[in-house]
Image (tube, rainbow, N blue to C red; front, side, top):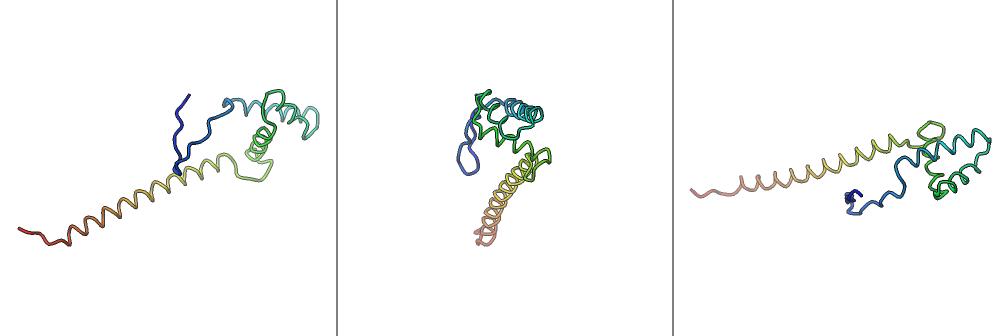
Length: 117
């Protein structure tokens, strides 16, 4: 199992509960069952029960898949990842800026001190 890395806030993310391929498979099953039966809500609960997944978790996966496919309004996974990447970059740039300001103040103070020769 991979080590958990702290986030910028210092908290540790929760470990993954399901394998990576399970969400895709479960969502495909829900869409296929909906298409076959014409039902909207029943297939989600049945598939969740068959795969041993919390129905609310599967509902969130299906909702996100619909957003990603453009069937429902919302922030796509790709956009969300892009925003997170930009937020990390802003965090690092602010950190670097802070370090540079401190260094600049230090060297400015050094230049203002009288030197004894």
